[in-house]
Image (cartoon, rainbow, N blue to C red; front, top):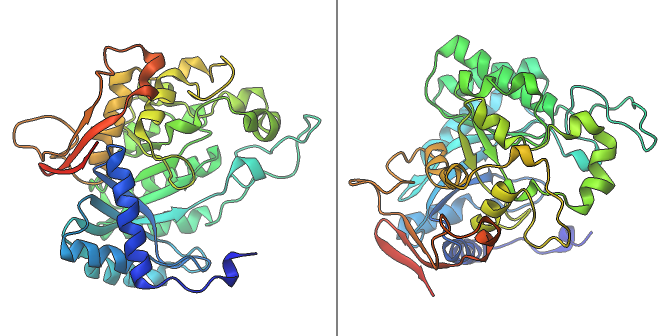
Length: 355
């Protein structure tokens, strides 16, 4: 109601916003990210030119991969435009080599795509199984073409049917093109059918998780678990099962939807409990990650999904993208991970944040 009345953002405002965001993210120990929404969407201003300006003049100190938004109201005719934008948007530490496909919605309003219907308030099946925004057959064709052109595809796949449709699309691309190493990834993965867990490793699909969400919040009782049912609710955020099935985890935040703080996310990944919670309930404890695995998903995993195999780990010859914490979280109690703070952040050996 208010957004439509605001004046359009100027390029100067978009650039200032980008640099302010970068300062915040560096203060949290973030040296790079993938921006999942480049393009105009529902009146939201496109930050692409701000990235190009900052990358060109060196004020973009982070390493950023841009994901070009797939317009689901259109089809394959937009692919040449995406190719042209990819060629244009490459400067300094910025490149737009990914395509973001929104395959479904969210569970809380019953738009996440499920393999079986949602339940009603009385526990009875409804006629609604959520929304697949792109017809699965068409999706397979689009992804196959994008893969052949060297694009990474970044799927929003929250429900178990959307996860399956995304994996089916990657499988079709692999069958047509072979394994091209484009590092396609499925983001959010709130509900994953057990039959699909092993497919991630087999297809080279990366599991892009948002660990902060894997906690028993009030909305789980009010908006989610009653409408999924007990069996399907236990398939939520199956981080442990994905690791045991051989999947490669990459961790992110979905900021600004939720906090970008990796330390808070690490805390929940390991403890399956929000550090701010006023209860001791652990959210499906069998899905907890050990700290080295969770830490790798935020470091080596995040670098890998963004094509930086020379970052994310401490090795001679790697990029000196480094974060210094105020304590050794590997030896501190797991219950105290979220209490750690970032003292210094370096990108390419250059200090970009200090307290």
